[in-house]
Amino acid sequence: MEQNIKAAAEKFETLLRQQLERAERIKQEKEFIDYSKLDTIIIGVCGGDGIGPVITNEAARVLKFLLADEVKSGKVTFKNIEGLTIENRAAHNKAIPDDVLAEIKKCHVILKGPTTTPRAGDPWPNIESANVAMRKELDLFANVRPVKVPEKGIDWTFFRENTEGAYALGSSGINVSDDLAIDFTVTTTEGTERIARLAFEYARKNNKGTVSIITKANVIKTTDGKFLKICQEIAKDYPEITVNDWYIDITTAKLIDEKRRTEFKVFILPNLYGDIITDEAAEFQGGVGTAGSANIGKRYAMFEAIHGSAPRMVAEGRAKYADPCSMLRASVMLLSHIGFQDKADLLERALDICMFEEKKLQVTGRDTGCTCSEFGDYVMQTVEKLLK
Ligand code: IPM
Ligand code: MG
Image 1 (spheres, rainbow, N blue to C red):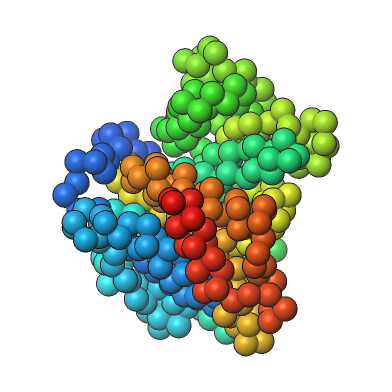
Image 2 (cartoon, protein in one colour; image 1 turned 45 degrees about the vertical axis):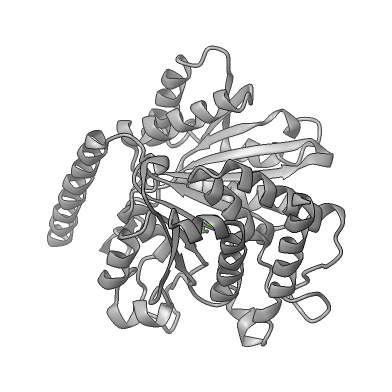
């Protein structure tokens, strides 16, 4: 046992040093990249696993349609990136094989389909999730997830911290002995400041009025306590914004409370709480299949669905009926992020019409509804009508 303790302590020391180095790297970070100054913006497209290639290619098709002029002039180029599949990742025993990562790093933004995350008992080696690895590798510290249900007065934007919390060392826990396993949660000053700053800036620019800081600081006193305190400090620079703090448990309940929930606007949360509550929130909007997600860093950004790769749909031969809306919503955020706000608004408007208003076609995930590419056509036709 003494030896086990010593081995665990040594491993812990290594982890501490790695995290201190990471915190140091965040301090050295420069400003956000300015896309308007680039000659060419490179959009990488990674299909992923399961239904990923179907819905990602559909979203890429719609993006190419919207950006046809920019592609022609050379301002934007699309780059297909192969190899972010579970088979290839398993073969390399790596969350993201080195050559795939090198290709990704040649791009500015990535449109990424869902990737299968192995778990113990799967036929795959228990490698780290490709999502989590990409967020870490590209330092995509902010996971921005909007959820809107206009007729119910719901207009939420979640700013989930994306590189720390329970995820930072999620694959580095320690089995100290047969009877004791330990995981770690990480909060750094720099890591918290940057997510808080981004959320408050967003609230200010978009006149959101209220920011809610969500933690479980009454129990997870050290890391959540630090997260809360830093967010409250940053809030002082935004005196026009109302700031409140809630615990994650009661927040999940209040999202169901019809009177209360419309008061929430912008949320800032540590990684794991953000993961959980954004699935709940997306359900009000029509399910995780309808929600997109932006992973923002200073140099790179990645846009994806908030759901998984749905291997069951593929096994049952239903992949072509997969719903592209999550990836199309992610594409709205991508367009906005790289500076094409008009095109983002246009796509968003078309999606609202197709999904909530006109509903000429419906995706049901099976042959009772339209196919993924029929829905893509419908969205593009709607864009054309809006432009007339
Ligand atoms: C998400 C997903 C991922 C996460 C999984 C696939 C690792 O649930 O993007 O919310 O937990 O972050
Ligand atoms: Mg999730």
